[in-house]
Amino acid sequence: MTRTPELTSINCTSCGAGLDVLGGGRVVVKICEFCGSELNAQDNYKVLRKFTDRRRPRTPFSIGMRGTLYDVEFVIIGLVQHTERWAGRVFTWVDHQLYSPTHGYAWLTLENNHLVFSRRYRGTGWLSERVVESAEHRPTIHINREPFRYYETTTSKITYVEGEFTWRPKFGERTTTITAMSDSAMLGFSQTGSERETYRSIYVTKAEAEAAFGVALDLKPFRVHPLQPFVAGRNYQFLLISSFVFAAICLVMALGFNLHTGRTVLRNTQVDMRDLPVEIAIPLEADNRLTSIRVTGDMRNSWAYLEMEMLDPNGQPVFETGRTIESYSGRDADGSWREGSPVTRLRFRPEASGTYTLALSAAEKGLWHGGNGRQHPSGEPFTRLRLEVRTGLFTGKWMAFLGAVFGALFLYQFGRKWLHRRARWSGSDWVDED
Image (cartoon, rainbow, N blue to C red):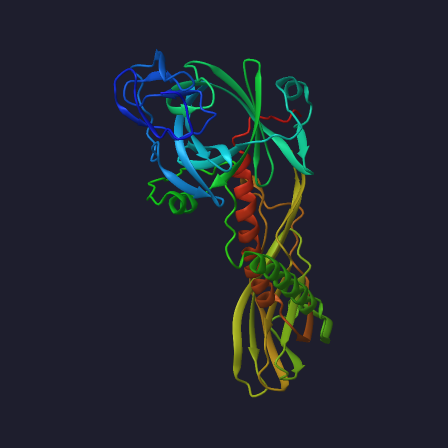
């Protein structure tokens, strides 16, 4: 059984099981999936050694399966399980060696139910452990003007092999791999003993793998893979840009509405406390705009509850409400403090033109009492109120609300991508020093 291109099957020289020959002329060993014997593909498939009592890893792919990935037809010719132990945890992944008569060899890796396609990279550039360990900032290597930033360093060993390989795998053989990642790909700089290899890897979606190999895959990843692309959606860019633009427009309009000063009907109208209750005439026009009434008291560690009733030109009630104005200040162990507000505002929309009447009274008032039930020595009752009435105003709150809605949509779209990127890099072992 000399290795020839026409050879398509053999019988295992150890157990006699029928085995397909799939991997092309560069295959040097074939490991029987039935008895674990390593057969020399370059010397009549003589038994080199046996791997026994090895548990086959769970994988939805089997040797001999064919699929088309990236317009190239591949056949699975072997699988290797790698195991890494780090910080008391065990990580495993399975590399499926692929072979194409026209495009050579590649790998399909299954890790945490994610799939990654890798091919050997023959360009220049290398990232070593020494460079990583001595770097003050995250190392970056540029390949064809594409920046690849350091991701992690792993040291794994082979714990299962099966099928055909272009090298002789050894159980327990350790491989150190330094990975660096760009926005769309990852470079793996692997060293086993004195041999160095560089691989370029990209993510394979479940749908792509199912279409390629014609199988239904029960893969349910529980976290984002470093190479997993962000699924933006068909209208992502439109929603991102338009929501930002509309949010900005709405907020500018809201600010413009709120800055519109209207016209003053009453300015600094003084009301003495001794004159309360009092009625104040306010001439207004029904222009579908807002009227604002501002009441300010000269409070000093005191408070008052004001009752206000507005009557329209026909003497009909427009509204009846109450407002508390108060102001407190003092010092304690933490320094000076101030609480409350001696100002209250209310807005309404006049529905008829004419003279409105504001009935104003102080239903209750009082001084602030300090500790131990004693009246605060600086508390003084208010002596006067000051009124200011402006009309012809706009409100920007609804436009601000709409701007907040568009802003939330923008943050949601932007945040999706930001959180995805953060999840991609969350597994990196690089720590920036303060």
